[in-house]
Amino acid sequence: MQEDLTRSPSYTVTCEDYVHVVEFSPFSSGSPASLLAYAENQCVVVGTCLFQEEDVDVDGVQFSVLRAFHYDLRIDALAWSPESRLDRIPTIRFCTAAADRKLRLLTSDLQDRDEVKVMEGHTNYINHLVFEPTEGKQIASVSDDHTCRLWDLDGNETTLLRLGSPGLSVCWHPQEVFKLMVAEKKGTIRFYDLVTQQAILSLDCGHTGPLMSADWCLANTIKVGAVVGNDWLIWDITRSSYPQEKRPAHKDKARLFRWSIANENLFATTGYPGKISSQVFMHHLGHPQPVMIGSSSIGSGLSWHRTLPLCVAGGDRKLCFWMTEM
Image 1 (cartoon, rainbow, N blue to C red):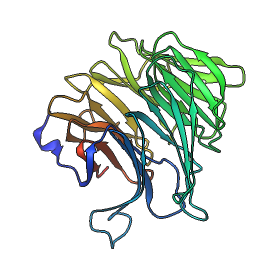
Image 2: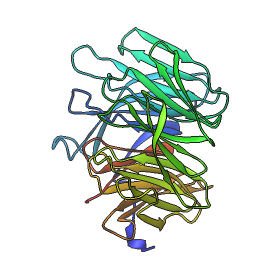
Image 3: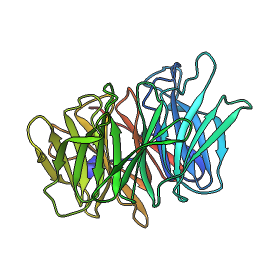
Image 4: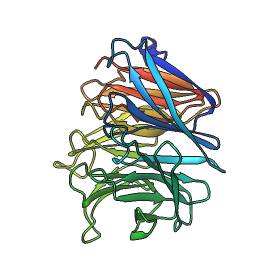
């Protein structure tokens, strides 16, 4: 791997504790700034980010904390609702998964009204969750208990999909609300019709290592990507159930795969958090090697900005942001 690809973060934001989870909202907030949430040990901090690429008056990054929400336990995953907005009457809504196998839906007006709904049903670790992206009236979650479950905003479980192995990733089609993608650890990725609750298409890794993470490209939904073992894999779902491209990425196993929202040819992968640092690779489909390599001390989490070719990872008392030129 060429050393000259390794980059220090373009921007950093200092945090009070180790960051386990970090997520940009993939939806417009109704303001020039982007919503960002990150989870420390017993706290979720919600703020806004504005970068110098978006506003010439900003030096680097301007991060403003809106609220900190305290939890009694560690948060392992977080998803934003499309109903979170800062114009008109400010409303923040997100859902978290924690080590007690419960989901918590938090709605806040950022003043004095905070409402938390607890959703119980999973019997093992919850790996990933997502809101239905058009109206945000449903949440899907996947777990080591070999299920994908759908919930309404009252906290009721509405659908149960049984899986063949632990569910690692779940993604909703950006426009077609009845299409859901679920990736399983054994290397199968299925697309479900939520009306019939049947699988309508499946992809196969054709691979021996465990699938750790998969993502549906929201900018071009025929593309699906995943990390399996040490490799990244890309499918064109119109062509084959087997990957079109497969390349080695991380020596120490890959952990996360995320498509850029702003550019359908750009994606990022992370390695497993090591004792000292975790690597973030940014890839472009036209290039055999990563176009950039970042490193974050005991990093975790990975998320892309909604309109910029910029991604963020959590680390030890900081958020690290990398901007790519692509």
